[in-house]
Length: 499
Image (tube, rainbow, N blue to C red; front, side):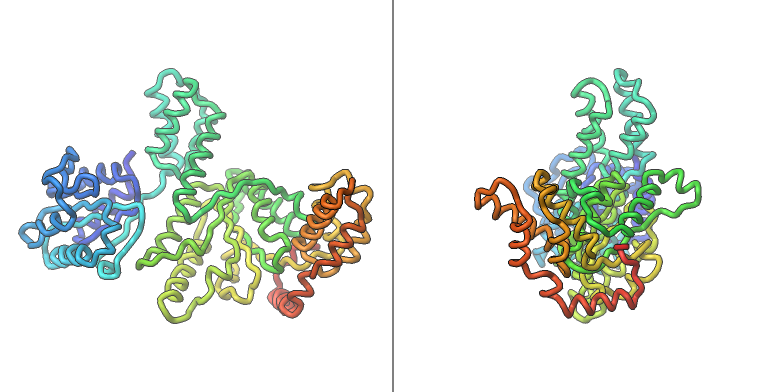
């Protein structure tokens, strides 16, 4: 299927005489098709790692054992370069070689001096050497939209007469499930599903989900988190839970909500005390919305080449949007954007990343719901907290007595449901003032382990009280920091997650 926007952009850039166009994709065949349609009669020189200098049409070698350096040397004058498209594949590893970079730069300068030529680099990895930065324009292959995916499915059904009876609703489900996959991957999965039992059924959606997990793993920046936790696993935080339930209603009825005039939900920032259920909320939200949960590790974004970090962020966002509807969880947001506005290379990259992220949050209209969590709001840039970035900012404090009771119930029930009726939870609640949810979970785990090690037939109140006595609560360890944090949240008038 033709990627129309890519074709238009590439044609425009070639026509305008841009010296190097960097196409960031692994769909080399699709790029070949587009180039063959818009080459304006120019001769195409292709080089790849496997076969060296090859004939673009037949993909057969034109010169035996032709290295990249040899091929670049063959074009080092305006006359030799004129009326050519130089298509380079598998060349990213050569960007460590100053001689190769210098030769590509030399060709780019000849193009700027009047040679009617274009260098097109095709790679799934975005790596830009400093010396080539000002000559390069980046183009990214757009992900297929739902209508394009439906056409691929319908064409496949037409060509395989035995599965003509696939109903429209199932095609729609497949189209949503296939979002984020390439045409090549979609056709492979359709063929695999069809070969399995001669038909396309709802069961085949599981295969697509597994393929998406593979794709996310290979991308290396996002991680798909398995959903085990539900909203019932959260003790307390009733305001936040109620807010999530209302957003879930919009999310599950997006078509209806849009018609009604409801804006697409953007996301939530959950800030506050460590170990009080912020991460648990991200997982529970995805479960409630019935969508995949993707975790963005901001540390993995940082690359060593110019533009690589920003490229990684763009790819991560594009992938999340392609897979959407989904929940995108960004943990410890304050660490990701530490050093904003500072001097030095690292700080400048972080500032650019932050700018890109802010723009996306402000403008996004895709069903990618962002759940960002932060332990220390004071380290976050004020621009991030302005209205319009997130739908709401919630503060999560230490659990109150009612919440501690619920947290004890959840963790005892999970491990020793048979002992719950014998344990005086009220007594445990009185003894755990200033404990976080994670502290309480730790206390229950320690008590259960001790009872097992001591060959006890059940876990008693005394076992848990003993574990409480041996635990330093979060309010003891971080007393000053927590007081300072609570005042800051109050001053900024963030919504309390608890009632």
